[in-house]
Image (cartoon, rainbow, N blue to C red; front, side):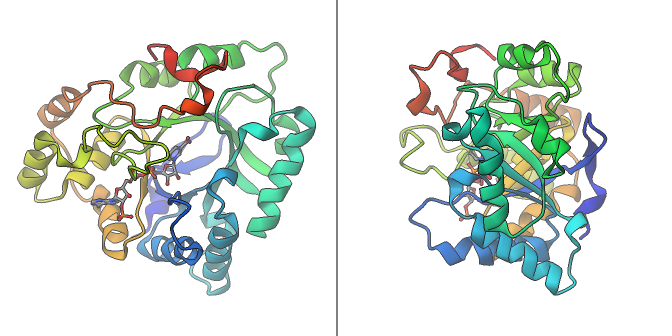
Length: 297
Ligand code: NAP
């Protein structure tokens, strides 16, 4: 399937495929897995690949992309690759070297989207865009006030094209989504399937999203799976959605998200599941003045 056709236009004119492949796996996962899984994802039709300095897998993910380019399966311009600037590199003089470090690991000339991973400080990446090292600049885990702060920054050259945040039926971010839409900023949903439940990040007593009975009933109704219902929900709200899997069968399954539609009633039922369950609370940042998750949205 050619997922390239399913794109949203960003506010800087570039296009982002609405279904993305999430590459984050726990650090205990074998390194080779990221390469193998990314290759499987490209074979299955994913063209948007989401990674980050933090994930420590850019070498493997880059190898997978380059090998698919070398095999003639894709061209560089067919791939939309996202990397993220980690919070230790937010001092202006560290930004470009951090991006260059990612590019070196990837062995790529540019990334399509570079995202400020957490808003513990706000620095522009505009020079990297002007230098051609990155096509688009985005942010992640920003609340609406932090977005507003960036948008109101005097002399802002490029506004962020996206805000990548946790988003799923238990935390549907409807207010933040409305805010982003009003500013022409695409909301990219991470942990759309309820996270990998990594012990280091996620409270193990939190509810398991894909076991939800409403998702189960809709899956049965549409002869799909709860995961596909959760992914489809986002697409019909105008959200770009990431799906992580290391399993070939599930990687392929997730591309079926374009093969069916939820009714307005289904969407309403899914909206009704919202219960402010935030799986990734980023507790390392709780004392910081820019900690994003104390705001309502
Ligand atoms: P997720 O997409 O919510 O996936 C959670 C789990 O669902 C995976 O462990 C996967 O297990 C399973 N899964 C996938 N497809 C399935 C299917 N069809 N049926 C049943 N289970 C399925 O995971 P996530 O890693 O939290 O989020 C996705 C991506 O978002 C990450 O990889 C990363 O790229 C990004 N992210 C960004 C941030 C940020 O701060 N910006 C934070 C978290 C994540 P299997 O591998 O066993 O299939």
